[in-house]
Length: 328
Image (tube, rainbow, N blue to C red; front, side, top):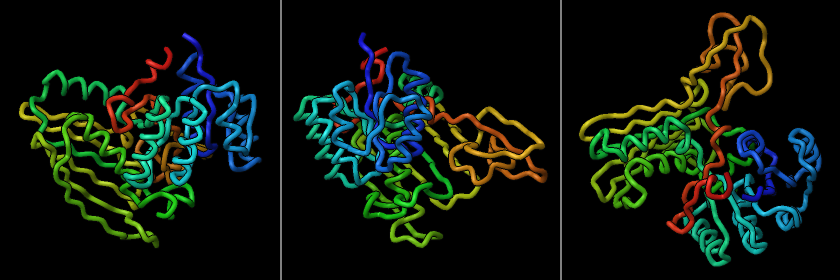
C-alpha cells in the first residue's frame, strides 16, 4: 500500500507527540510540511523532525500538492476552519481532541467531512494503549460479565499553554479538556451503541482565577443501566493522575496509566527538559512525580506519545477507522 504524506498543523506539544509517533511507529508515512502560526516555531519544528517544509500559511499547508492526509493539532478554536479546508481539498483529516468547542460545532465538522466524502478521524489516546485494548477485549469476551459501572479519572495541575485558560477559545474548562478522554474511555467499555439517557454533573472553580470550571464530577446513566462516572481536575498536584475502573457482574478491571508507568530511575544529578506530561519538577521520583528527600530526576515514558494516532470515532459508524486501515 502507498505511503501517506502528511500535513501537520501545529507545532505545540501535541504536534510533537503526533510527529514522533508518525515517524517512529508508522513506517512509510512521513510529515511532508508543517504549519505554524509562528515562523520561528515552524522553522525549529522543521529542523527538529527533519521535515522538508514549513509555512505560516494554513491554506497552503493543507492544499500542498504532495500531501494526502491532514493532522489537526491546533487550538480548539481553529479546528472547524482547518477541517473545512481539508475537506474542501479532498484530503483525509485527523483532528485532535476535542473535536469542537460545542456539540453544534462538532456536528458541523462531521457533516462537512461526510458531505465531502473524505475520511474524518478523531484522535484519542488512552483508549488505544495496549492495557486499555486488553481490558476492552476482556470485557467483550465476557470476563467480567455485564458492565455495571465505569469510572474514569483524569487530573493534573492545569494546562501548559495560555490559550487553554480562555473558555472562548477552548469551549470550556476541565470538562472539555479532560472529560472528553474520560467519556470516550467510558463508551469503550459500556459499548459505543449504548446511548446515554441521563446526566448529572457538578462543577466548580476552586483554585484558578478563570471563568470556567477547574474541577468537575459527572454521572452518566446509559440505556443498558450501566453508570459512567468521570472526575476531572486542573488543580491536582503531583503530576498527571489517569485511572480507570470497570465493574461488572462477575469481575472488576483496574487501569493506572500515568502515576505508575512501570519505569522509575533515580539519580543524584540534576534533571532538565521534558520529564513526563504535567510533571511539575525535573527533580524527584518521576515515575510517580513525587518529590523525595534528596534530589532525583527521571524520564518516564509516556503512553500518549506512542499511541496517539490510532483513530477513534467521529460521531457515526461511517467515520470509524483504525490507522491500520489507512496503511500498514
